[in-house]
Image (cartoon, rainbow, N blue to C red; front, side):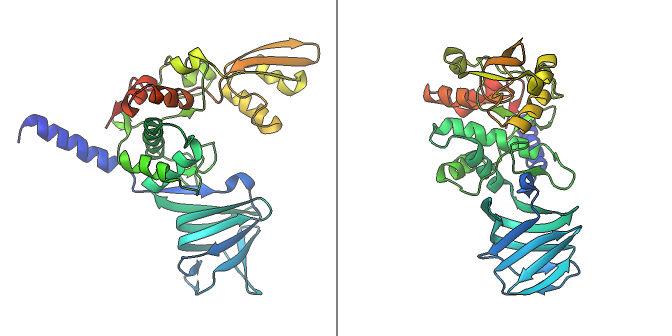
Length: 331
């Protein structure tokens, strides 16, 4: 065996060892639900804290009572600290949303809110992220780039104390409606990650930019030195421009501090479209402030609109990732 082959085998072994086989996803936490309906189509028994089980029941009404979970099944009620099951199941936040999952589910209660955590296979999570985050009618090479970025993010380490990641845009939006193209993008790039300093790189992405991506530091965030501001020819040629006017009192912090945290504080109160991106100029006049900008999102990392445009021009998914993450390795 040559020295070069031996080194390649070591790198490959290290890559496999660094990848988690499963990830723990906090689900539906955005709603802080007090009630959930669990419908198990092909799941095992409901397991309660303490080891007892409930066999053969496919629908359960769950509610939070402080730090306990109340379960109502066919008119019978009981209380436990935790329930779990595994297989294929459906969770409903009454009157708001129904989602399907495949994996191992655990539900607990904290301060009157239910917390569901689904442990799923990493590649299932990657396909779910591609389906939730990318435009599935876009070119395949762009979806492949998204799959690698999403996998790297999920392999880079946890972002929450109670679970690894959540299924909202705080981490990555995961959807249960897995399109075949999303599954294909995950399968075709299976195991491939972005690497920096010997570790999987926490690859961020944004819906679109204004012609040049940002570094975390440019928008007031902490982040890896691997991020570099990259030119995006697609958005530079035809940026998605926008203008918004708001009462000055609602957006005063954005006038004082041009940061992503300040923008997020505003959109949590006024809606996601209130200030679509962190790429803007602001002017105050009287009691109002007008923001003129371009792009969608924080502007860091992979520009999804730019990636799709480059793919249509013939760029490969590797070309796309090298453009937006020039300092990282792909393997």
